[in-house]
Image (cartoon, rainbow, N blue to C red):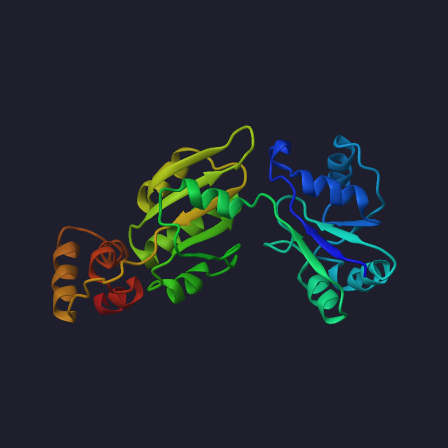
Length: 268
């Protein structure tokens, strides 16, 4: 029976492609690609000649039926612009529908930015939660729901939204450890490790560029929760030192086990 192959492709360095991926791409009848122009360059680099069709966010629902019709006649490979298809990329509706129709769906593992960043972050790897891209508006709402999660958090972010996201995490989580992993496997790959406040200071000095994967420490297993009286006392002391309500709330959140928004509410 014809098979849908989910093929991982390099996220930067072309040497990361697997021999199995190259063999499958040579043997299928059709390749569905998120970006046919980039896919064409990639396939020509490895001297692979196979029909291409597009599958991206805007046409995903419409093209899924067409690709499944093609799958009925022969094997199809799905590739994304880079990395594993379906991981913050198009592909889920196609995979779900292929399964429902009884087609075999076979993964061809390959590089993925979030796992590459995780293993070099210096943060725990035994449990992690992958978040994809956080919401463009009010990312703090997502982080508030995750404030007590002890697993390491991994997420993607665009350079022009990096400052907003780091600030939202600092406000919500306190000053946790973080690794900023930029341009993984590419020429200008860089991994910066430190805490959220220092990461913010860094990007204020240097305009962020490229694709970022953020790896953030999870919550402490047994956070020490302050009493309300302790929080009020600390607020009074911090604000007497001249700190704003927002800054005082952020500082206390890092040590008290309280959410910043709750501390701020006490301050007013």
